[in-house]
Length: 499
Image (cartoon, rainbow, N blue to C red; front, side, top):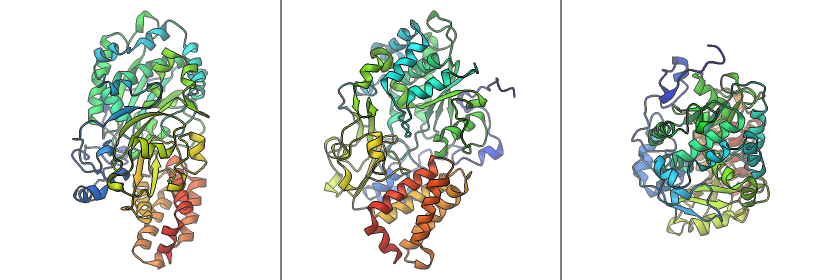
C-alpha cells in the first residue's frame, strides 16, 4: 500500500490477519453479558460475591465495562451514573447534567457547533493560539501540554496529517469517556473537527474500545447527522476546509490505550508498543504526522474556542489549569461523574463529593487514574488534585477514575490482582514487562500462600526497579509506580508476608 493511501476502516470492517487477531482478547465479542474483574470491581467484590466469583471464571478475562459506579458489574445494564458539576464553569459535563445531547438537534440547542462556526471565520493559527494560552494538558493520563503537541503536528512539512481520538478507556474506575460519547457525542466530533482545522488534517479516527458497544452505535449515528448538517465532509461551512471522520472499534486490549499500539491497531498491524522517537506528531498513523488526544481533552476544545484560552486558564491552579472530570467507584456513598477544578484536595473528593465510604468503611487508600499509578494512603489525602502535586507523592491525576479501597481489601491481595492484570495485558514487546510483571504476580501469590521458598521480597524490589528503568512504555513503568507506592506506604502489610 502506498503510504499516502488509507483503507476504509468504518465499523472495523476489514478482517484481522491471524497473527494480528492472536494479540487480542475479545475479537468475537466475548465480553457481552459477562461480569467484570477490573480493579474497581475487585475493590467492591464484597458487595456482590456471586458476581465477582462469576467474573473470575471468565475466559477470556473481561476488564472494565465502564460501570464502575455500580461495581461489581455484569454486562451494561445499569442506569446512567449521577452527574454533578462543582467547578465555577462547566466545560465538559454541562450537557450531561442537563439531561444529555445525544441528538444533533439537542446539541445545537445547547450552543453546539458554534465554536466551529466561529473558528472557520478565523484562522487555524487562532485556534492553535487559544489552545496554547489555555494551558490545557492531556486528560488521558500523561498530562502533556496539548498546545505543544498541536503545534508540533501543525509545523510538520508533510501535508498528509491525521487526528485520532483515543477512546480506548480501559483504566479501572474510569467511565468518563463512555458517557461523554454516549450522551454528548457531537462535542467529541466538534472537538476533533476543530483540532483538524488547527493542525491541517483532512482525516480522523475515533479509536473505540470494543467493550463500549452503545458508544459505537451513538457515535456512528452522530457522524451521519453531522455529515447531513454540513459539519463533516467537503467544504465545511462553505470554506475550503474538508474533513472526514470514522469510528474504528478495537478488539480487546488494554495496551492499545498506548499511542503507538493504538495507531498500529488502526493500521491493521499487530499492536505491539513501538520505541520513540520518532513521536506520532512526526511519524504516526501510516508514517504521517498524527495528533492523538483522548476524548475528554478534545471535548474541552469547543469551550476554549468559544470563551478564549485565557478564560480557561483562569480555572484550576498551579500548572494544572481548567476542570477535570472524575468518576467515583461504587465504594463511595455517592458514586458518579463530577466536574471539578484542579486544586481541590483528595480529601474533598472522598468526603465531600463521594460522601465517604459505603457502610462507614475505613479508607485504606485510593487510586486516581487506574491500576498502573501510585496508591494514595490515608495520611496524604490532603494533597491537591494536580499533575505535579500528585506526582510528588508517587501518585497521579491519570484518567480521573477514583477507586477507593476499604478494610475488605488486603494490600498483598491488591498487589497480586494488579500484577495479574498487568501480566495479562502486557503486549510482550519488552522483557521487563512481559516477564517481570508475571514474576511479581507469582511472588505475591506464593507469599500469600505461605510458601517463603518462592517469595523473595528483594527479588520483587529488583524487578520493580527493572520495570521502572527499562520498560518500553507506560504499562511497565506504571506498574512499577504502583508497586513503589505500595512498598513505600504499606510496609506493615507487605513485609510480614515474606517472613
